[in-house]
Image (cartoon, rainbow, N blue to C red):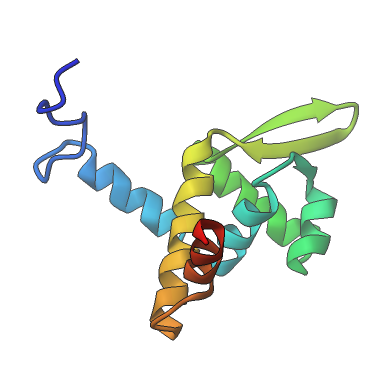
Length: 121
C-alpha cells in the first residue's frame, strides 16, 4: 500500500463532496444529533428513543425515517417492535467530533483535553 496515494474521496475535487454536504444537512437538526448520540452504543426502539430525546414517538419516527433514508440508521424488527441502530461507526464518529468541536467554541481549554492530559500523566 502506497502511503502517498490519496485516500478515496478525500480530495477537494472528489465526487463525494456533494454527498458529504447532504450528510451534514441531514445532521443539521438537534433531534437527529441526539438520536445518533442515543444510538451510539446500542439499538433502541422508537418509544425508548422518544423518552431519551423528550419528543413524541411520531416526531422521532419522522426523524428516524429521514436518517434511514440517508442510510445513517438501519432497523431490525422483533414482533411488532422496530429497533433502530447506527448503520456504521462513521455517524457516531462524525457526531462525536462535532461535539468536541463545539466544546472548543465555548472553551479554549475544553473538557476533553483535560481527560487526555490526565491520561498521559
